[in-house]
Length: 85
Image 1: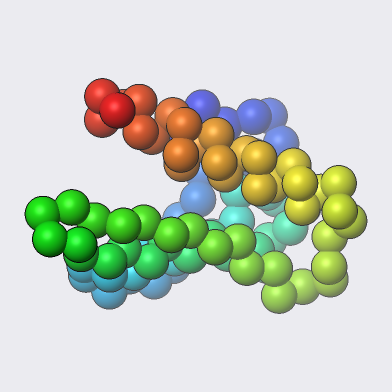
Image 2: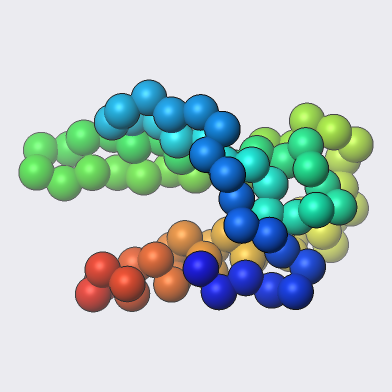
């Protein structure tokens, strides 16, 4: 993953094959954040839904926007390209 200077590699905190993966936060200043991936089989394909969970103090609208944007780039953009899509 191409992380920014204010981001760290996530750790897998929970998983249930083949339907769930939970990552730790990418942001050291927001350690309570979690990124949840729900994976659903759809015939020969799969559907992926990611959810940013923020159990701690609510981030500002600007911070939420930044975190969502970064996850979208890392998951929906770069990860897809790594699989040739």
